[in-house]
Image (cartoon, rainbow, N blue to C red; front, side, top):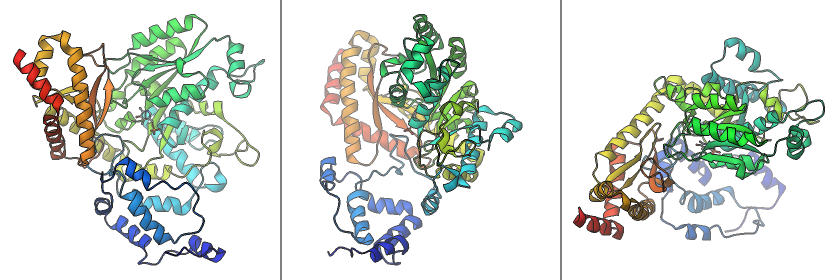
Length: 539
Ligand SMILES: *Cc1c(COP(=O)(O)O)cnc(C)c1O
């Protein structure tokens, strides 16, 4: 195959000329728009190759010397990349928070790239900047429900921001704690503020030895990245054991008080609305009071659970979120927007000024450039996808989606509970739950002989790992796994299957098939046979 011509003429054509109607790229484009699920089932051949094999097709390490025809390259992508991708649209892929998207995002994604606006500054995003501010306003109202006057004042105010749009929950959490840190060590007559003088000077000025955040053990690892990055250090992310999967306000208060006795400062209490592993929601209302008593920032990580606010029925689960100083939301989770759509919202619209930054050529004082108060610089117009989704679904549409996910999780929990060889480990608050395989006779034995639980749990852990891996490798369906401390076995963590019922297209039949497959795989393992034979006799 001869390469493309190395000339500016050729390159200009690459910039300007659409490929012919029958070119490979045009065919891909057509197939994607005509029938995405058909495209995926035809081209995404799950689990034919091992990761090692796939790595071999990505073994080049030099920049290709000469240009290649677009269509030739498109074929390459189909073979190497698309064929080995994971079909996250599959209704049997219930292990993670990434799922099928509504079809309209596909043409909108083309529009987004076609316009290629840069939200860092008004000069490259004249209409997108107000649009993003409006999206932040809508989500702010969903959380904080302020007055119409409030939104009229702040929605497009150059000196305030209701939040920051960002690539995801991680950056949102980092931004929230960055704001909290700068507010905790503010400027005064003798001190120019931590943003200017740095953390060491700030801590000395205020007489603090250390600074920490407090959350439950179920806090997302992005919090630990955040405390590292804002200079507190990972040791100063204080986590509290939570066998019930929820942070105890009493324990948080006791820990905070003890920590502050010694010239230390609690920077923030972080409540989680929808933990990544089990979907539990911390008692936000009480935690807000704890933060108040400790005199610290209250942040709520609602990356997963925030969308629950759309539901009149389940809204109450997040009671107290409106007391948070800052809230993280991920539209690329339960709002079914493509990845790259995180948000942090501030109760007080002047909070974002704690991290405001000006530069000469852009972000000038008084400008409405969003880049002045965001951690990220150049950013695309993902807010358009959120805006479109909010209109196309409406609150009522999202409510239906949220309610059906939670109800499906409850149905799945009942299927697990009614099967003698499964054990439900955490029941669903939102659309997440965890469980494991545990032969009926072993469950009985563990009840009558609690002293055996530790050893049996180790065998059950091996069983869970083996079944999860084999199911994943078989490629028909996917559940994830994690290790949890639970109320039943508070002394040691156990390994469990974790499912996230995010895909609206997952049916009860899909769920039954997943359970049947797990039983079939388990029956063939030596661990299962050993467990059953050992404990049968003794009962
Ligand atoms: C997903 C998630 C995050 C991280 O968000 P990213 O978008 O992956 O950066 C943080 N916290 C919670 C609770 C999450 O579910």
